[in-house]
Length: 593
Image 1 (cartoon, rainbow, N blue to C red):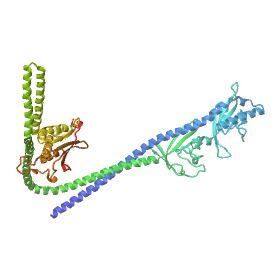
Image 2 (image 1 turned 30 degrees about the horizontal axis):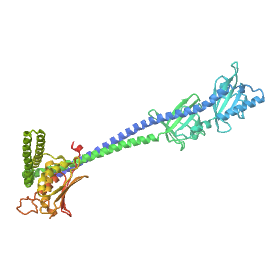
Image 3 (image 1 turned 45 degrees about the vertical axis):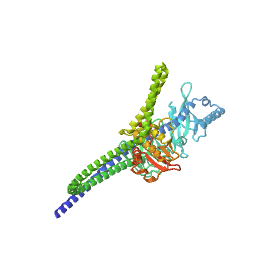
Image 4 (image 1 turned 180 degrees about the horizontal axis):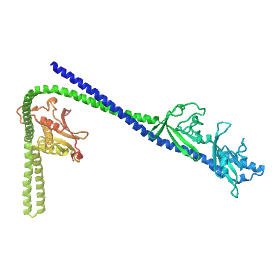
């Protein structure tokens, strides 16, 4: 016993160590997988972010180039204006100045001026402090016969301007002067300042000249080095790293700039600048974290379910070992009990079979009993047509002898009608008397009621009973067996007729009502039901003991038949007698098909 306990303790300790190693290994695998998913998701998100940033950067660059191109084309077009080439008098210069001022106002240019070949300002839209522009880079380029451009900061302040100079050629093709257009960069960048991404344009000297973030203006980029430094040369937080093909900057340059950003560049040789953009990578980091967390959660949930399943399996194995010993002990007892149960089941099946045969015989006996009660009336119904057939046959022979074939044919037609009537009566009797074995199905309730009325017609006539029943148009289908339903209504009609024997008023009324369930009410003018609580019990009868009127099985049989069809039958006393109601389940044509 002690040895067994010691072995179990060793097994438990070994299993515990295995579980610890399994859990540790699983958690390590989940961590590695989550890290891989984070790295892959982060790179994918950066690629998508990079595509969007490239599109935004190209859009900003195109917008700036397009806006600056307006002033470039303005300089080229206005350089050949004839008013600018006729500046001999003060009136000519006043007219040229008014023209330049009007164009400058309409194009939002800061200033427009016309210079001679020495750089001397001959006329300008706005007054200028420097009358000679010979040293201006844009003017020098224009004197070479090409379009010149330059950008600068106004010495009197921080205003940034961009200048275009276009040469003006004379009739012989020589350069006579140049038209310079000055644009305010602030007005140009006003349309896209404050957009979502931080965009800035660095000139050839490495200075941020245009940006939608004013904090970055005039920051400087060291040659061959990433990042920017403030104009005052102060040290700022900055670091750069590569993640795949993406350059990431980590910076702390103000609340309007991201801490971690994706850095992209685009060369713009037309305006001699480089466009750069900083895109916040926080959404990419968040997406990667969510993907990694989702994978980790799924793996942990799967691992937890797997661990619980293994623990449950181990517990079931232990419980199974205990149960096996108990099962082995009880197998013999169960075998003996099983043999006894089989014997009892066989006896019960035999008893149920005998009960079913007895019930079938009882139903058939009820039919035969009803036929016995109706035998006298049925004999009369058959005898009367037979006598009529004989009489019509004799009449037909006499008419044939006298040479009156049309009268003989009329008698033959009446004989045919009488034969058809007898055939219908015999058919109903045969159908009612047979032991129905057909399964339940769709039955025409109107036809059932008409058959029951025909079977009881002779008996009701002999007993002077009036039957109120009007056959409705069309068919009404219910669920049941045709012969058994006929027996139910024959029993109810006969019971009503029996109850009214000796009464001065003998009327039976049959009413059909349609609804969720079809109901047939049969009301008589008899004395009513003596004991409504027992009327459906077998052998319960109000007739005298030993009478030939019946055994008290009619209502019991009818109750069982209606219940087998899924319907219901009930009886109640009324002011004039008793009323029995049969409810049946409707059966549509589509359901039957």
